[in-house]
Length: 137
Image (cartoon, rainbow, N blue to C red):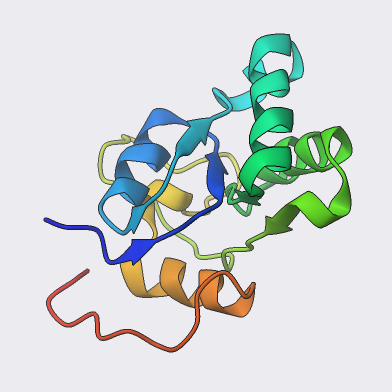
């Protein structure tokens, strides 16, 4: 299936399943933080700094406490004019591949529907007019 949206900016997500999820919706460079691994990964932090300077970045982490901690860490790495933060609504639930919900019981990027992600990108000013998403989850 062809992604709906082409983004110039790189997108930062927490994990590989978030990346896989977004690849079905957007065409962009998608970088994973490997969760809290970003706190010690100097190479990944340097890559984020380079991408931020080159094309800007979009930070799209989960809406739970862990996602907020990761987001704040990334926001401290780069100038404010080089990133945009996208916030997903807090939705109770569990990802299909998991046997139990997260500690806070919230869906992450991987479990969020296309239309909700697209609306979050729209609210952040990443994309423009509403798109037709018929037939898409």
